[in-house]
Structure formats: C-alpha cells, structure tokens
Amino acid sequence: MRQFLVVAFLLAIGMLSDAAHARKVKVVPDAGDDYVNKTLPEHGTVWHCWYDGATSVLCRLGEAVRSATDSAAQSVAPIDPRLPKSAQQLWQSPSTMAGALVTIPLHTIPFDIALTGRLADAVMCGGTKRPCGVIFGSSAAKLADLVMVRIRQLATGAPTRLAMSD
Image 1 (cartoon, rainbow, N blue to C red):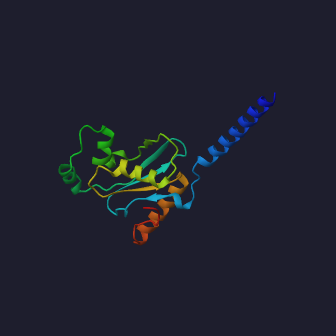
Image 2 (cartoon, rainbow, N blue to C red):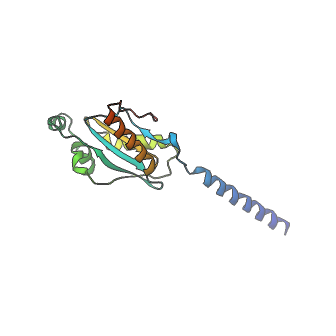
Image 3 (cartoon, rainbow, N blue to C red):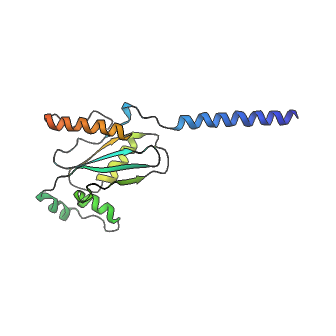
C-alpha cells in the first residue's frame, strides 16, 4: 500500500510539472516580439504577415507596385521551374495575389517570433530580385499597429524603417 501511495504521489507531481511546463512553453507576444525585415521599399512589394496563434503564419499583400522594370526583373532572374506555381506567382507577379491569404504552415509553436518573421520574409520575398519587404506581427492586432505606423511614415515622408527586431 505504501508503494502505491508513493507511485501515485510521484505521478501527481509529474502531471503537475508537465502542466506547468506546458504553460511556460507558449509564447506570449509583447511589444518586442514583432519583426520587420530590412528597410521597407517605398516603391515595391510589402507583405503583411502575422502569426495566427496556432499552426501557421498568414500573409496578405499590403503594397504592390507594377512598373516597366517588372518585366525586366523577370527576364534577368528566372525562377526555378521545380518550385510550386504559387511560389513562382508570389515572386514574379505579386500583384495577382491581391486579396489572397497565403498560409505558411508551422510544425511547432514558434519560440522565437523574430525567427518566424524571418521565415515569412524568406517565403514571401526570398526568390525575388525586386524590392520586397515584410511587416510581421506576433498577432493580427500587433500587425495592425505596425501597418498604421508604416502608413504614418509614408504620409509624412519619414524613414520607412520600423524600430523592431532585425
């Protein structure tokens, strides 16, 4: 009977320990968890991406500029035809993705939101030679704040670098 009580006690302690650890693992976003890549282009593509809090990063086209240099950029930097058509479309003609929601699946909870922002940058801008940038927020609300800052900067002619993690 004594051994049974000891085993039951150890199991209870183990379950409490696991539950406490599980609560610590989840990332609670705060003001420093947002990511904005390199200086954002004023006349280029800017993607708005955010972590959905569960299993993916979601991205929408924020700004896209079509110009005569678009066709020149396509001819200079061909994209590997083995890549999925969606990746080719993101990089060759992002303006055709207006209104579409791009989902980047994650296989685990992101422990470093800045690295998740870098992932979004690599997916959305990694294969293009055109000016491209990503505004990434740890949540949709944080992204909205960052987008408002970007809009104010563009309206006032201020530098387009947001003071977040690089």
